[in-house]
Length: 418
Ligand code: NIG
Ligand code: FE
Image 1 (tube, rainbow, N blue to C red):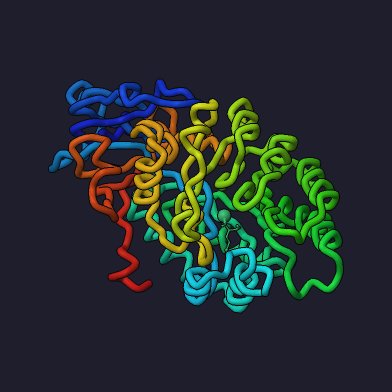
Image 2 (cartoon, rainbow, N blue to C red; image 1 turned 60 degrees about the horizontal axis):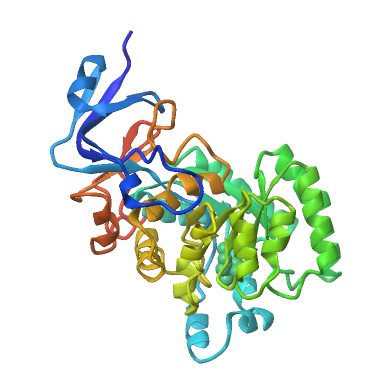
């Protein structure tokens, strides 16, 4: 029995196939199918092609009523989406001359969000998460990475990651969970920082495995709280237990990239202050370079050298870093568009960084481009062509979104308080 479902016609479909995973991209590599259709069976794509030619293979058809261009669902591969409270005061403090790291060292910053997050019940965490996920879905994001790191105790890290796991079955977005227990040393830890990292690797990592809470371990080391020898022990333990490793590195100082490459990290994220030797090293490696323009906008810092990273051969992904401290501004497409103008990135490089290259940062090879057997995640924008996605006034929302083959209608979190 035929179960194929045909969606279209789209004025243009951009499959993003035939583009390399690494290095610079030219816009003439962005081939498109005009008057195209996508044939879907269950959660997967069966075929793409001219709508008319696919019609005979379809058991059912969804006929689009307006001209829309279609791209793969966007992937936000670095967020801290689950947090409690606000840090609006710190925004003002930074603008009056205090640095992000000074505020952190004085017990504000990340620690302030840890306290506000620990105060939440499971139900409150779920409510916050539903609301923020609707916001992401509205902008066409169909896969999101979410880090812990505002728990920083066994119980609280497990609580946050368990909430992510529970919410997963209730939302039409794929959540990739990452454990960031090595974010900072929690202020209420009354033994050494080495003891903290060791406790987390010996006690928390096995629980993550047993309960399938996370397969990725992240670490932030641009502060002075963790000693190098303890960082090594932590990362070795993570590797031994089979976790993927990713890094917050080179946001404020040099050092993390070399370490990330030593451990074959799947991604190294931030890179605002990366220097030329590391740019070359990263470009020659398989580690994905994730840049976070939202954090630069939030902190008033220059963007990471995305142009140079691409020219050195990197696989460059672009993510929001959505968090209450450095990146409270949200909109991923706006952030990517601004990065594009300042760093002179082609539309092909921008869209790749939000789709198949972001998938690589999460070690996922079943999405981020439109091809047979890939997950049927895509969204359609009212634009004349793909340049319009970055050009049109923001927020620029897709008119339609499909997740795993099913059309979804996100609630507007601003007009529908959940
Ligand atoms: O990616 N720099 C470290 N971690 C986050 C910010 C966390 C926070 O300030 O709450 C980041 O910028
Ligand atoms: Fe981050």
